[in-house]
Length: 328
Image (spheres, one colour):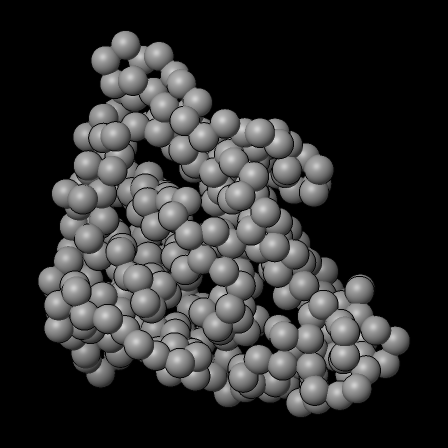
């Protein structure tokens, strides 16, 4: 069966079965927790509605990392800024970090209010061609804690994907929390028929981060989520005055590049530390336009170009496959 993972036991009922993760054959399977999640199995009308809503979105990119504090939201925001530069593309950012929504602050739209219309929720616009939606816009203050169990998180993510009126988008970038839990399963499940281009995995050079990113790679492979590549963030410190680079987090086991090579996935590049990146995030500014000549800006642009090329190639391959099916 197509929905049986390669490492599944002999009598696996299939990941989309109602019995997934619950029968005796699932005991000891490394996929049991994922399969037994509370997400719906089999046909789901919400998946069809989400597919219809997102049919006007050309590319969908998920930003992941098994580790917290590695800069996923910072990367998401600057990926969006980079893609939106030149005003030629329409970009959307969806923040599904329900308990720690930092995207509104990083993009400079903290405190804005979401409005509803007949066509759905209207996202908040950072620029004319850069829109964002986050649970942060639904809270009474940035300090308010979100204390929710999995089903309520799943419900909000479903509502974001189904009800936000993005309009025509070239890219929808989805920022996720650390781990491989409810939010990640929800996004993958609800986008299962919406042709996600793939995931960008963020790590830092040290082994304590790489360990968790390896788990995220395993998650992607188990749920059949394509991997665009790995980005090594905080890869050395560049002095803003003398431009000398120092290793703050030494890659004791070879860093993200070696890990990507060992696991046979693309390595997109390294982003150096620069204190001005953090300052720009706190102030809601784009580092790419604030410090355009820095080594980190050059590294960002190179990585963004690689992601764009992957997505263009992915779209071409998808269109080619669709054409072949029509001719059969």
